[in-house]
Image (tube, rainbow, N blue to C red; front, top):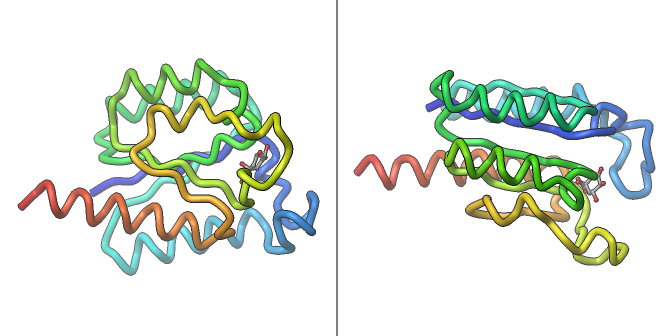
Length: 148
Ligand code: DQA
């Protein structure tokens, strides 16, 4: 099982940006949690962050060819704007889980639309870093169920 964890713009600034919303743990702390979760569950993981929409689209497309079984994606601000990321997720047709650190449902109106969610099997929000762990375990259990 191979999982791709994708993070959109400004998530590299975790620990610096809006600590009252996103907390004081850093992006490296997030990557460590993802890698630890992968090790504990004997899953291969790759973590990719970009501030550029096209790079995220490229990485999603690559997932079709590199044996990725599932995607965990926090498209960050591109959640609310990017049809290109939605189309890329639809194109590769891999099970994808959308994660948001904050509870976007309780935030500004412009955050209430998620294009990515239309191509995701599940959305997890408001659980901080643990949302990524939950998303990875969900994909793992889903793959186990389908393998039965
Ligand atoms: C976010 C929520 C988005 O609205 C915002 O643009 C982000 C982070 C989250 O993880 O809570 O950058 O995706």
